[in-house]
Image 1 (cartoon, rainbow, N blue to C red):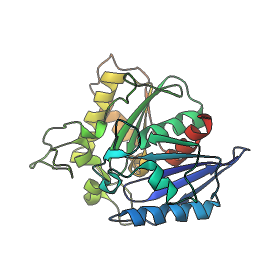
Image 2: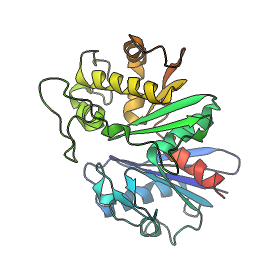
Image 3: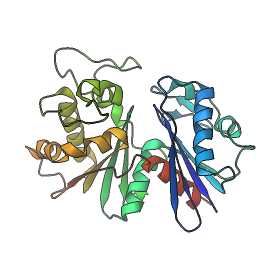
Image 4: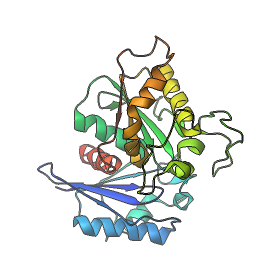
Length: 284
């Protein structure tokens, strides 16, 4: 048995395979600046070939955006519009010899949060925030995702932060001063170190830090988590700032928030791919 997870991100594809013994292998595609469908297909195939997972027992697919009512395609992905209207069966059928019979579709935020919660076998409530090209949120009680009815809990990245600094920020959808417009990967260029995602120069008065701290306070107010975890490439790169971020959030934080909460970060950039594989494996 091989469970394969495919994470289509805003800048690359990541994949993870799990065999019957619970052993993991992971792969990442070459980054793409502007992706078209042929490029996405090539990136997925490259990962599958590296993992030698051409005939998986089950496939988990996670990707960003709002799913259509039928659950057959993404109808709106702001950060990766090439996905809009691309039927999941057509996508998967173009990278395998045939459409896999066991497929599970999930949001990237849910998949990443699920992997973090199950890998660490944690208890209590976890708010997992995926920070990459966009921003997503998954809240879990233990390893059980919290939902509103049959739907997720909303898109944290779309939250209006108000103007921070001298000018308004406009995201790719035209929305103004969203959280994504401050902490999405493309917005963080002025604070990225020469060696890549390195935010050691980020200070408490920089707009991305102010926006992130405000967002974490909102998460506390609504969900009262025992821990907040910063996932995704940006979340992992913020490990050097965790103590500073937590101190800023704690300064004047309402006593109604969970006392003794912790702030943690990703241990890998493949949480979403691994979570997608796990969700696919347990669905059958």
